[in-house]
Image (cartoon, helix red, strand yellow):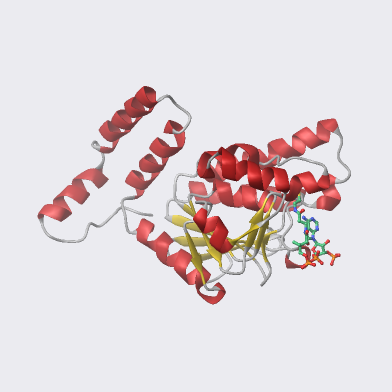
Length: 270
Ligand code: COA
């Protein structure tokens, strides 16, 4: 695959752009005229894209961002939401949740580059990523109650787990967005960048992760993700199980040997 070139034929993906740069994949939600709002097609394309990236051993990390100057993702598509009833409303939430679960459980790191509005489903996508950086100009929020609905792509569950119940309930119950600096203060993002520097910063962080052992990354992420839902004793058991598994890998031998031989490790990647 040619570095810097779209990885799929444009006919296959309309609302998502995928660019490969070495072991890095940059995924952009690409509906700028609708501020990258998530309609059914965009959700399906994102889901297929992340599934393909998960299966591709040559991909070491993913950066997720929004096309255009204004938005990361301005939410689920309100035109679609406005037509839903009980059954398709629930199905809509389940589709969005399945996408966020796929991102959260991806066997490689995902970095969100929040380049503008991250509202509703947009913030929920970012919440499923492993780390988040925001442009100084970004606005982040869960405005669903202002539309007479509630967050349905994981926001009511992931936001309090990340920022605590108090901060989460303020965002969820007022519906008001916060600035990037406020998001940093409440632990919603890992850092704030000048807009022009955001993508480069996210790529640098993602490449730092790519320089580490790929299996170690996957297992460390698994320990954190699965352990978060367990009582401490069970989570520690999980950690020790995974520690045992990682100690049996060729990657473990290479990492240890490289340190003792005072050289950089050479990881096996496709
Ligand atoms: N769903 C569908 N379309 C959306 C959208 C969404 N979530 N967010 C923005 N758009 C569309 C607008 O309808 C508009 O389309 P149009 O030009 O065909 O009318 C286009 O994107 C540009 O948005 P606009 O509102 O003109 O931009 P703005 O800069 O004035 O305002 C926002 C930006 C983000 C404040 C405003 O678009 C907004 O409030 N969007 C909805 C956010 C939201 O509630 N998301 C959660 C949904 S559950």
